[in-house]
Image (cartoon, rainbow, N blue to C red):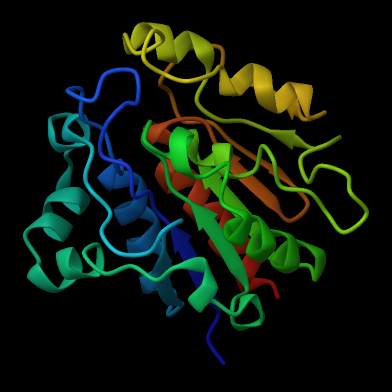
Length: 231
């Protein structure tokens, strides 16, 4: 029986502090994972906090981020249709999935943390030994997730994700609603980052796999796939 992966995307299309400033799903962070999982024969489903449409982050549609994988997805009507009608957490039975994988884009900072449905699915998959993965801002989906004993899922675990330095260099530090690097550490996570910004960096701690930024998308998905293949 093939492994099944639940991919998580955002529903948000703008920054709250400045509605005229668009944001959304960082496309390549989804497509690299999807391609890698598909190559290994994994079944995949896309879910979002509210269900329905997942808008695209305009910055992710420009070079160098708009690579072959992202272009192929955007030029494929069937693939784009998948982002028009994503499932909602209420439609998902966590028992059907071996892994959950949070994609990024600054938009996820607004709708991932408050989704009790996503927290439920993540907790259930993690506690039965399934894989929890997140790339870039995707780790915002883990910041408030607790386990059955009330402890934070990330407490005492090694992880990475988009750094505050990278927020500043990307010139969005005045637009984001909080410092996720700081917030995740307040939950007890052992956060680390690469010496240089925007280079690939992926961290594995048991069944938790995280990647720092868009450049880490392939490495993060590859590590998730490797763990799944061993099960």
